Image (cartoon, rainbow, N blue to C red; front, side, top):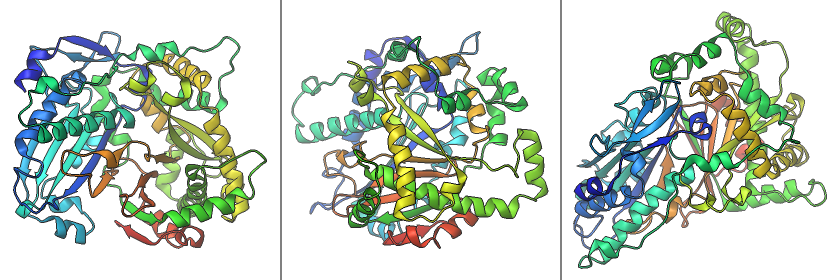
Length: 500
C-alpha cells in the first residue's frame, strides 16, 4: 500500500454523461477458486501476502479507485483523487468455516460465506454514491476451510467502469499476482507493464454530425420525464440520493439460473436462421435475446393482466403518467460495447464507461405470438439491425443527447419512464471472466450478484469444462413461475434453480 500512496498523484476526473447514465449500480462478481494442488497450504495456493501486494500494485494503474465522489457548484459530479486524503477501496482477507465442496454441493450459495456482501452490490451502495464516504471499490477475499479454495468478491461503482474496464482491473490484479507467485526472487520493477487510459475526453470526440437525425427511441429514453423525475433532476446528487431507495426496487429480487448447453443453443440458432432475411447472419446473442424477449414478455404480460385492476397499480399509473389499458410496445435493452464499433485509437485501452444500452421496441402482438422459429427470427432480425447501427455515428447521438441533460439524476428519469419494466439482456461472454488466474488456475465459477434491479438477464459463459451458457435472471416470483412452464424455453434448458 505504501508504494501506491507514494506513486499516486492528486488529480480530478470529471464524470461524463456515459458515466453518469449508469451510476445507479455497482458491478459485483464472485470468483470461486478450488484448490486442487496436492499441497494444502496458503503459501502454495493464492498466498495472502501476494494477493495483497499485487492488489495495490494493480491499483497504481487504476488510481481512480482511491478517489472520492464530489459535486461542484453546478451539481456536476467528478472523482477527486487527493494523495493527502485518499479514499482507499475496501480490501479484506478473512477465513470462512466452510469447505469448497460444501459450497459446490449446495449450488454456491453466497449466504454460506457467513458474511453479507449485498450491501456492496447495487442500490444500497449506489444510494451512498453522492457522499464523500462512499467507496468506489470493495474487495473481499474469503479463504475456505482446510485450504479447499478461495472466493474473491469484487464490486466497483458502475460510474467509473463498465464491464470491460472492470475485467481489465481484475485481470491486471490477477496477472500481477501470478507473476509474483512465479517470480518470487525478482524485483517488482521488472513487472510487465500495461497502458490504461482513464481520460473521459474520449467521449467528447464522438460528435453529432449536423445532418444526423436523433434516433426516436433514444430521444424518448433520454428526454422522457414526469413531475417526480423533473424534481430529482433539479436537485444536487448529494441531496437526493437518500430518496432513491423509495423509487427503485428492493435490492432482494429473486434470482433464477438456467443452464443452456452449447448443442441446444446451436440448434436454436440454426432453426431460427432458416427464416432470416437474405444476407443476415444471427449471433447466439441475437437468438437468445429474441427468445427471452418473447418468453419473459409473455410471462410479464400475464401477471400484468392479473394486476391491472389493482388499486395500487391504478395509483401508480396516475402518478407516473402511464395507462394500464393502453397497449404498449415491449422494450428490450441490450448493453453494447462501443470500443470495437467506433475505430477510436484509444478505445481499446480506455477503462471508463464506453458501453451503452441499445433500446429496441417490439410490437406487443409480435412478442405475444407463439415462440416458434419464424417469430423468433422476426425479433432476432430487429435485434441484429439495431446492433448493426451501434457505430461512431450513434455514439455521437448518445454524447449529444446525454450531455444536453448532464445532471447525474437523469438516471432516475430513465428508470421511471414509460418503459420502467423493460427487459435488459447483457452478454458478458467477451469479458474474459474465465481468464482470471491469480497463479492457481482459473476460477471454477464466476457469477454476478443481481439483486438490485428486476428483469435483468445476464448471459454467462460457463467454465470451459462445462460449456454452454448460464442464464442468470432476476424475475418476480409470479413471472418466474410462468417462465418455467414455457415449453419453448425449457426445452433448451438442462438444469435450473429458482431462488424463489
